[in-house]
Amino acid sequence: MSEQAQLLPGTLDLLILKAVSLGPLHGYGVLLRIEQITRGALLAEQGALYPALNRLEHQGLLESEWGTSENNRRAKFYRLTAAGRKRFREETASWNRLAVAIGAALSAKPQED
Amino acid sequence: MFPRLRSFWQTIWNRSRFERDLDDEMRFHLEARMEDLVRSGFPRKEARRRAQIEFGSTEAYQDCVRETRRVNWFEDLAQDLRYGLRGLRKGPGLMLVAVLTLSLGVGASSWLFSMLRQWVIEAVSFPHPERLEVLWRLDTKKGWNGPIPRRTFSIGARKIMFLRIYRLGSRTNSTSRAAQSRSAWKALASRPTFSACSACNRRPAATSSTARTSSERLM
Image: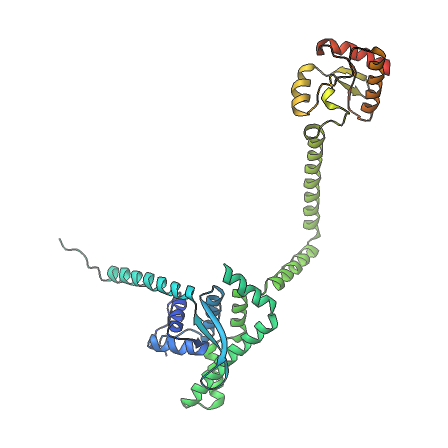
């Protein structure tokens, strides 16, 4: 467990948007998909997912609907809204810019004269 | 802004349903996790325990969700009020000072405003204020205190206090003029501090003496 990476703070919202952009999911499904696409990065506590999901729904980026899960139980499914899709694209672009910038900064070598 | 408002109202509107959904959603997560753990070989009891540990405090996260929906504002308000009242009961001195400060402040400013309103903003309640010509001051000790200087009158009274020179009647009939000034005097007597009186259509400089005589006659 300790060798698994923890999620960076602030990345959870983006990862949720990514997970849900691949198709409607219930909360537990979001967790599994995040683990899958990040190759096992962990939330400190799984419960932290729910305030984040609710916040995104509150902001109109997600919409939810009660449906039936794979094992035939009532579960709440989340889906990306149009606004959510737009925000996901923007966040992805800005994350990529940041990642490139940090990568460039860390690989800078001292100049020789 | 709109989706937030809508989700807020949906939450408030159907609070019990919101709570039930929140409970169901988290319970579904815990059970699904538990089943996955059982499938990977944990005994049921251990799986349940582990699922809960991985999830963290259900209560705390439910509170977190409520906070994002701002459903607790009413309860929070009530709690703040109770807290405030308890504090006031504990320290009555502070409350006394606060009440005193507030009442003095409110009293002083409302007094100031009513003065301002009486002397500056509101027009004088004389009949035909546009005909007002001379203004006399009634001093409770000295009696009639002479006409207010014309300069003050035209600057202070006309512009600031909206007083107008009071023209009484015409010069054609002196008896009717006296009668008119008498009736005007009666109307003015209700006003405690300022009084206006008399005079005809003469120039204001000459008016003051006439005004005095006619007002003395009236008295």
